[in-house]
Length: 157
Image 1 (tube, rainbow, N blue to C red):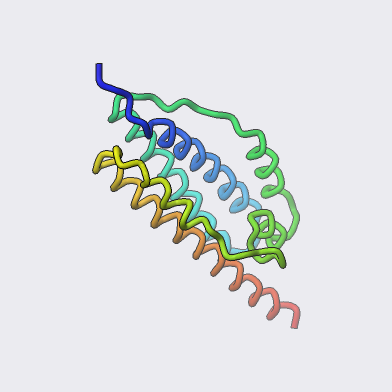
Image 2 (tube, rainbow, N blue to C red):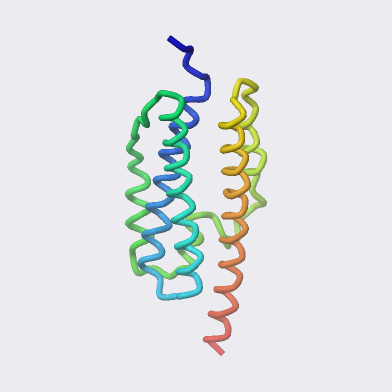
């Protein structure tokens, strides 16, 4: 019987986390009336679910099954994102646009995923694409926030 790769738990955690991300962005997308923002949120929701499926697929290719987890904080966040609070407050729930926002260190944390030298090339390729797309998601959200602020400012004039 082949030895269980050290990164199976990581693949499982990413698959579950991205599925939660899909739930969050899909909930927000269905509740916003800002059509430009809705478009960005839809793209991100699809991307999150695609990541979940890709990591689940990789798990099965390696001979393992996804072990679903339950994150109760996701349910609370989904409820917030489905609510009628303004989109600016919803951005703030992700730490975007708050006066306490700091430049994220997420990029470095994402690179730690690749620190395991035993990761096979196919899994490494998947993780590399995931890292690139997660960084792009952050850029897309920041850009959408700035554009929303400009649209809201023009509406108030």
